[in-house]
Length: 106
Image (cartoon, rainbow, N blue to C red; front, side, top):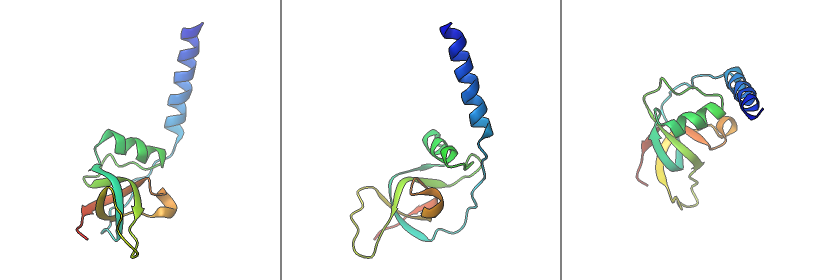
């Protein structure tokens, strides 16, 4: 009984994952100063999972991505992570991921 249930649950999860539409985000020149908790390659498994949750396919990109990012304000820089400039539209990705991150020194 338990094995049949696990097969059904697995099948449902695979079907749901396949049904989520994905798009490849455009790689444009970075314009937003961000404080990211980590910056990894787009081929990193963790970055791929976060991107997939947002409906993004970054598997073909060869850029660094920032995870858990927030904009750096003029008021001050209390960045406890990595300071970068990236593509990071908050309205679309909510600070979870930023694309094409380049380290900066403030």
